Length: 269
Image (cartoon, rainbow, N blue to C red; front, side, top):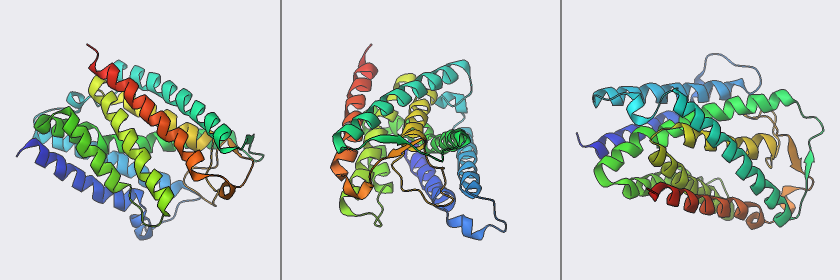
């Protein structure tokens, strides 16, 4: 079977599991309930574990190992994860500060914050991002590269992620950004993966960036029992009064700039 066909089968299988686990469909079928927001953590963990073993199974059919895809807990992966995590943490903290200046609000410390929630957020985000990296990097990206080359492989994954990000529940402008930003992220995460030939760096940047934008500088409207608890800082004004473009453009510009930087890093001999 050609590599790109296997990649398509892999994506189709994990797309179904993503719908069942991470989109919460299977939550209605669980014969038990978990306290608070633990059901979401449980389902995201199941997806990550399933992705790991499915990747391992596909590798076995190709007579290769997970380490051939750069998926391991070796020293290089751990170091690149930590290095990437610090980069993601720093760059997206800058974005969040710029965002407040451009949109015209201030970050204020949430009065009822529990620091344990930040730790819980980190664990949840790491598990969620591990599942995403296994889903959209690793096996499918490698197999598309084998069939069509690196640039075409990234283009295919960009198209897939964009298609997967469509949500008809979102209004037009927000829908546009909810597609554009993951698409741009796919570009630089894929380049990091190709450059390092390991998953650690991309996973580190992914985790650091999401930790900042969810559990530290948090623009979400707080909901009871939300999957990841409220972050450390919140806006001092109602989000409805702020410009959507002013809120989202700093993320877009950072993603474009970071993609350019890692591209030249990638092609550098």
